[in-house]
Length: 371
Image (tube, rainbow, N blue to C red; front, top):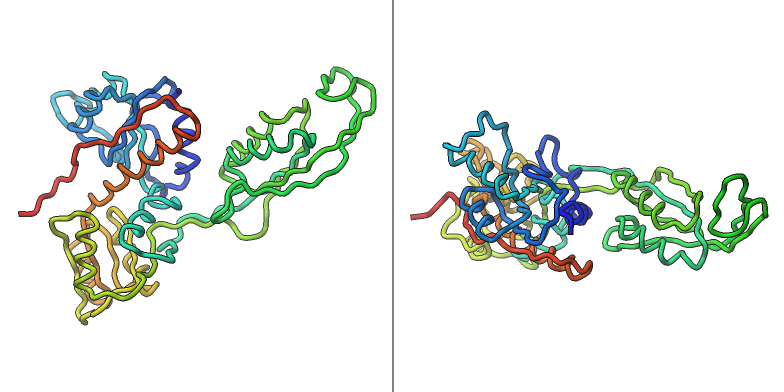
């Protein structure tokens, strides 16, 4: 299959437009206009990961952290940091990155963290996107309504909360008269025609309008389909980064610290204890990566504890004054995405009958050790 086809499916789950502004997600190296048979998921692109990809004859490397986060001054192979880019190009290994969009998507990395820690009834920590909704109404012959509904659902239309493939269908009579150079699917030129038709209505976020309309046109049997697209005034689709929710019951602060350490299989972690002792934890906020900037949002939403990586020394001083516990398990807990994403890839493979093999990178890219 084409790499572009796989990434098209990936983007239905984890769209690039959900990334935070300025985040360099998407294709970084190589091309998606090629056939692929072997895909590997990694947290980072490091020389050891590239060597692993070459050894496994990988065609496409999907990663959480963009390999070219800042501009490259020089591309010289004497430098091991930049030689890996040349090695990727030499071995025709494309690299595609999904960064903050993987943090924001429902059933994404922050939700997986919550599942691991037993945090329930979650909502986002900070709103990141508010997307207007649109509705498509299209008219098709009744005997082809089912195929049209399936095509629209496959294009991403009809998602509402915990439901997918939602639609509404009305029945009626369509009337038309083909003229001139018309090549009608039903009827004859210059002869009035009427057909029992279904009017199918679906909603979708405006960000996918082109793909929904394209799917509708591709599935429609008529030479000149009749359809309407309009913006809805009711609630937009909202997304957010980070998560906050509740443990089933309160636990002691020290018990929860150990729970985090065990859940992420950590040798050690950093804890910022508030000036005023907090005995128990129940309301938990979490955001993977380096998200100390959201700690005030966790405080505002009443979190007992905020979990994030790479907490800065002086910010930790400010955090101490809030009355909230802060746990810094490091950035590398995001490696959870490797197993989770490959499980999703294999699910899509079964659903769509792909002839592709998926691999989890076995290289640890954690630069830190505890002694």
